[in-house]
Image (cartoon, helix red, strand yellow):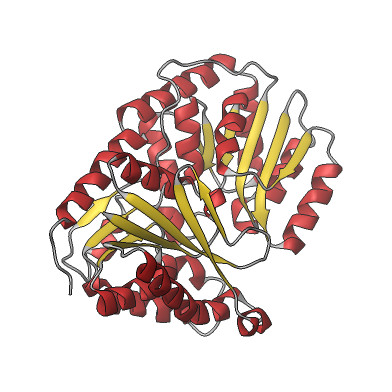
Length: 377
């Protein structure tokens, strides 16, 4: 099959995209990624790991608009037109939409071209953006998603807990494909460096990153590495905090292929996410998948999905969403190498038994196999 994947961000920082695309290519399919190019920093087209990547560039009018949420509606038109032009050159069989902010394009392509449509719900998108949008706009997107789901032929969810939400309004079959990573080893290896904390991810107040710097700068025999992307005003404050602490290195934006090597070299992964967020209550953090395959313990927050899994797998410490609780957990693991090793071994075992891409790949290929021979016109 010839597959068009659509996403609204750069694939450079999205390991799930490449895991899915590589698995499909290795099974004999062809994959093209059409992604929304919001800034003119990348070539409009390139081939990466055998995947043809096409970047849909903003129009002048889109650049004039102040926010991506406003540009998104215009991109739905632009992305659709770009996809149609690609289809004229190389007819697609399937359009695979990553998250709700690409689904309107996929539905229109299905209606006009008769393509099979896969919806890959990696987030509960409306709930994710709801806290940042005025006038209950998040509810608008939740309702729009419900109206578009009947057009979907293959429905993927990235977390088992999402099923509770989607089954409340659809009878569509749900295939859970987690954000698991590929195993790099089945043998535990302890970290060789000094006691090192790692956070690489979205840099925002909801991730407790500034608080992490406050905790670390007063701790002896502790090093911390912080990387990721975020809003410039927040990142600038964070950079200053890191400069003020001799034991914190700020490494900025990191492509996904470098995240695992950084995790492997660390002692401990930090994933303090806001327990009041609905998404955090039902979705496992990506940091946890990374920590597991590297055999590294994690510190995460109570009343989150990550906390629930950490307790079940005994692969880290689960604490309150406070500076005091985080400090106490770091000190406990710093002073207990045997506990760190035990939790790390449990993490790797969880990855080998359940949380690895080989398991998820089988489900993905089975879903695609079920689409063969179907006419969606």
